[in-house]
Length: 298
Image 1 (cartoon, one colour):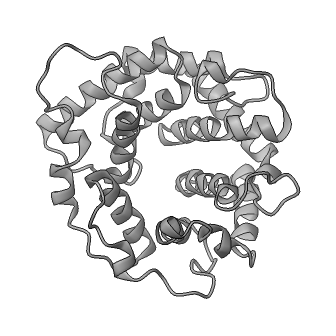
Image 2 (cartoon, helix red, strand yellow):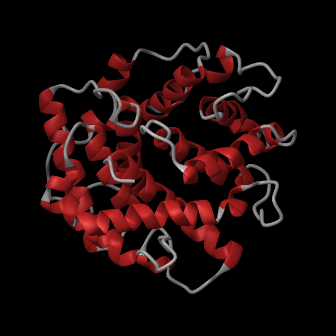
């Protein structure tokens, strides 16, 4: 399993750096319109934000950060983040929170006003996400404290729901993503304790493991990588569990010789190349790379 994990790490990080041109929303290969052109760069910035926590210098990380600095300093970048007005405040917040070191996070503009980040009408998970990035970007807001957000978060409410006939999968795909992202935000991607009670942690870990087992059986690669990350963020040692080890083997089988994961699920294997392949592969490749960085292999 250790060899599989090392190959996953080297391959996904290597592919990411070899394909930096595709992450540049102002490069010749940028294909998506508007905000879509910025999403790959934002996801790369999140990977580098966590990758940068490791000790020592890394030439691959330096290359990725150099691209991100160029993107964040491009005069057209703010316009990409505000291309969809209803999401503009949130994406500007994420962009500021993940800005490369030494770069003006607001590129000369003012941060979103507190009313633009109002919690009204947002789900508990969405308020948690907003608070996480607002705090990281040092922006004022009126979102409730983490202690209150935890009580209504899916990590607490879903495992505590009345048990009936076990669903297959245990939770829906949107709820599974809410679980994984919540674990990351509550722990700052494994940097701090998530704040759940011991009983809530045990129940949440059990639900994550059941969902992970389903994803491994059905080759849902993207969610499998994120669920391993979530178990780590809750303070566990997912690679020491049978289902965590199975997830690593599942991802290693899916990895292409290039180092990339071909898409979110086995259904995404379709032989496309170039920009079309990048559009399918980059997200799952990045979250798998992030998983290997967070569990300590890179």
